[in-house]
Image 1 (cartoon, one colour):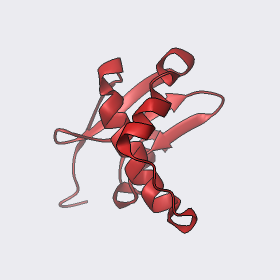
Image 2 (spheres, helix red, strand yellow; image 1 turned 45 degrees about the vertical axis):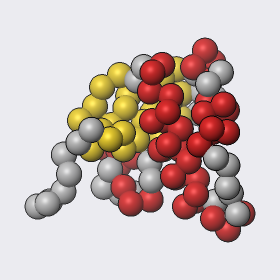
Image 3 (cartoon, one colour; image 1 turned 90 degrees about the horizontal axis):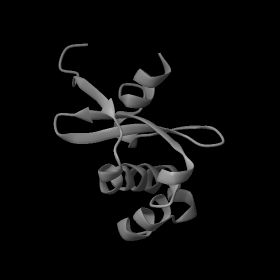
Length: 96
């Protein structure tokens, strides 16, 4: 697809917490708009922080220097990306 961004992938690291939280927050602001979901970045970071010990963190997807999505495994597979990346970004790449 001409003009499409080129994603790069690398393993997730614990120092990715802020970027992971930002991706999750942006995705939830879109997905849960009907519920008036409005947690701050700090609240999302606090929620994710203990998950590093509990979950299996696999891949981070980057569009240029910004994290575009990630894959983490808990009791189910979680793929998060903002709505602007749907069907063309990391969630799609992870499923193909």
